[in-house]
Amino acid sequence: MRPLRRAAGAALIVLFTSGCAVGPRYVSPAPPAATSFIGEHAVEGRAPASAPADLVAWWNAFNDPLLSSLVERASAQNLDLQQAIARVGQARAALTAANAALLPSGQVSGVVGTNYQSLETPIGRIGSAFPGFQRRTDIYELDLGASWEGDLFGGRSAGRDAARADWQASAAAAVAARLTVAAQVADTYVSIRALQARLAVARDQLDTQQRLVDLVALQYRKGVAAELQLRQAEGALAPVRASVPALQNELDIAMNALDVLIGVQPGTTRAELAVAAPIPAPPPLSGAGGPAALLRRRPDIIAAERALAASNARIGVAISEYYPKFSLSGLLGTATMGAGGLFSAGATQANGVLGLRWRLFDFGRVDAEIKAARGRNAEALAAYRLTVLRASQDVEDAFSTLVQQEERARALTDGEASLVRARDASSAAYKGGVASLIEVLDADRRLLENRDNMIQARAASAHGAVSSFRALGGGWDPVPIAQ
Image (cartoon, rainbow, N blue to C red; front, side):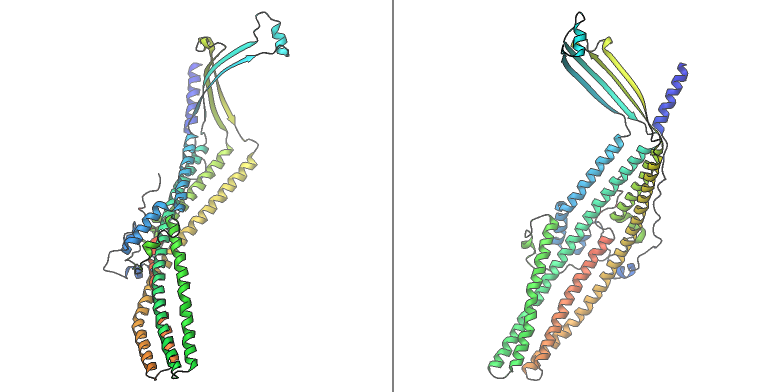
């Protein structure tokens, strides 16, 4: 009998420790079939002789020390990023708990107590009738207990796999948050420099228009110009004057937004940004390996794929509820009514329990749980595919914006010299009595619009470069997130 018992015990141990996997085997989705982006050649042709910018620290490629400093400060102080990092810690704790669920648990318990029996209760009356009855009773107990639920059908292992994938997804989401913050800082900085340039143009135009009004007013007082011309000049001056506070308001809002991104009180960086500087020029770019490489670089895609893996593992957790759960628990300790005999042979106590838990008559509910898990997995798969498509769209949109806005800025720059000459010629002709005031005002308006559009086009191309770096997953070294 003893060999048989040993064999049965060994078989039980093997059964408890080995387990069997349940649920579908996870297979990563297939990568996209496209080998390159549509706008890749146009972007790489912008500066064919130059090496593309480094994707890891792409903000340094704009050659603006203040921009680089602001991005680094935001990476260290941004509060949205700190929340994302805290969520990674929470997911890591959940993984630790899932790993611990696969291991035995133990506890030590002890009791020291005393009881003074009433003589007016049934027990007290009966006990007092016996010789040697003592109303006071002391108890001393010390126990070491352990319990373990075997992962016979792999449900807890699947739960651990889901927790690991959740942790990896949260780590990728934290990286995505850092990349988003860096891009937002760069975008806001570009907007600030563009607004400062537009303000300078508007103020120059305001000075020009004011001088024209002063000239017409002088001519009107001398009887050379009609009142209509004076009112036309004053009317043209009003919208130019009104544009200055509007642009200043936008600039104030952008500076406040930048401070919040950095995690400081609004107004903190005003002194650093007070002196206007040129809009950062977009650096050379490349397709960075095309759509296939995008899957490895974009942290939001990695997070979506890990969320898909977690939902797949939870199908196994749900399926494991079809099967019984076995547990082992035991206790070894000592108990006595006197402290001196606590560790004597007669005070020793022990017990062992083999437990069974099986939802035998609850399969309808288990079926529903499995269907729900499969539904969440299908939802996660659709979310992953949509994330991949939107990532490719982000790249294509950013490439198009960069290339087309640079072309627009070049066209506007080429036309500015002609508009300046036209404005000067119309002003001279008006003073000579050859041209009308309407021609002068129209030349001023067209020059102002061209300069403002040129600044906006340069800013849009810089925004396109920032969006390109962000869309390509730039801003980090894509090593495996968490294994």
